[in-house]
Image 1 (cartoon, rainbow, N blue to C red):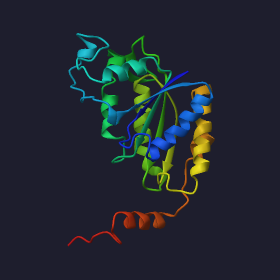
Image 2 (cartoon, rainbow, N blue to C red; image 1 turned 135 degrees about the vertical axis):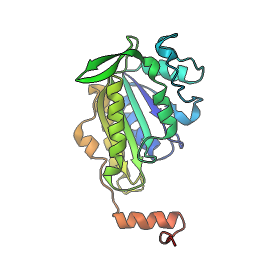
Image 3 (cartoon, rainbow, N blue to C red; image 1 turned 180 degrees about the vertical axis):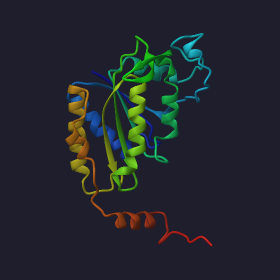
Image 4 (tube, rainbow, N blue to C red; image 1 turned 30 degrees about the vertical axis):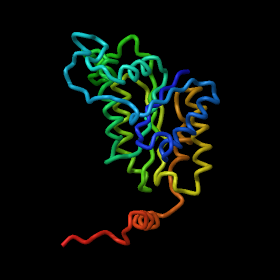
Length: 233
């Protein structure tokens, strides 16, 4: 089982998202999986030009020469794709979004109707068929992940992948549940390598936080040097 992790965090593997991803990866490796990790902020990848050359003049190959050559090749040889990102403006980081925009060479330009919806057909040399999401958020409410999860599920459908689940931890890892969350994430990695999916109970083990909403607000205000929001005049 080959697994590719695209880590969109600017803190790479050292921040909350990276730590959660690391626990998942440890479980995958324990179950015998082969894991590659690529950090978006270490890659030179320009924005998609929308030229569709990868669908016309050079099928399956982008006209731009940068690190996306290696990313696309890694996706093609992987069974599972893990997207790891903190929540930025209700979605993934811009660097990770750029990588996803540049995935067009994995698909044919011609369309088909799949599951009652127009989709592009994946190229035969694209092996990946499962996608999962790993994310953390500074706010403590679980619904802060809803737009990102919806987007990840849409990306999975467009790449002809099954969505294997999401590990989403609100409030980052500033919690007394770090050990519990890490253990559940490792177990999730084991199950993902074995079954290509994360069981619901392990996804739900990420939810909740050890502090109240008001305590979290007070903590953020202290951290950023404000006792209360400024009042507009």
